[in-house]
Amino acid sequence: MSYLFAFAPWIVYAVVPSSQWRWGALAGLVITVAVTIRGLSKRRPPAAMIIEFGSVVFFSAATAFAFAQPHTALHSYLPAIANGWLALISWFSLVIGQPFTLGIAKQNTPRDAWHQPLFIRTNVIITTVWAAAFTLGAGAAAVCAAVGVGRAVVIVIHVAAFALPMLFTVRYVAIVQARVARIHRAAAEPVGTVYRQRPSGTVYARGE
Image 1 (cartoon, rainbow, N blue to C red):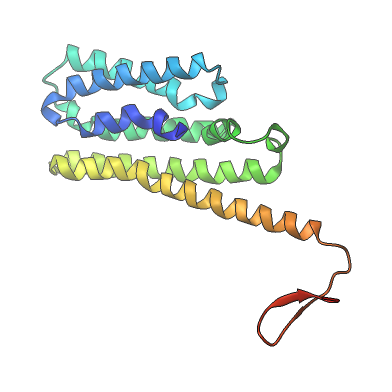
Image 2 (image 1 turned 90 degrees about the vertical axis):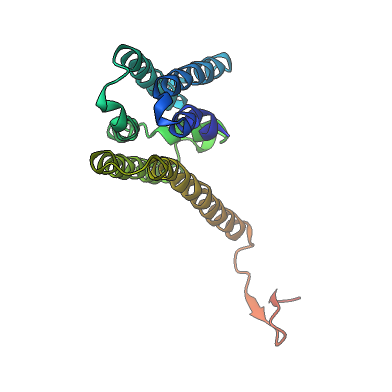
């Protein structure tokens, strides 16, 4: 849910018709300000709101530019710029050792797990996937703008840049959690327990 709120302005902006791009930028600004205020009211730490703060900067600049230069040819490149900005935020968060997904994940994870290597490495991997998706999305959107590809294709690219890493995040977290659960179960087994297999295929401990 945190990801949905953080990226809601970008998704709304992506689906607004190109002819209404000024209002799309304004809508993105209004939504991102609302999301940011919501996060601050819940006392979320800055590390958990990297995307929100970056969104405020982007949509403030995009809205000002859109209304100052409503007929500029650059507006067709804004989807590419938007993905590029998110890619920049993502890569920068990795460079400074604060992957943006780490702050989000901490909101739903016990504090004693925050400094565990597996928890940190998992979020480095997830943030890297998001950064790569935004980078590829920026490149693809720029090519579409340069060759004049239809708006529908641009929307698909923009949405895919969010949907694919989101699906990866859900799947990868589930895999890691299952791995941790197996480790905990193994650690809870009595030392020296030997497992055998009945002809039926049922696995049982020796002595049953």
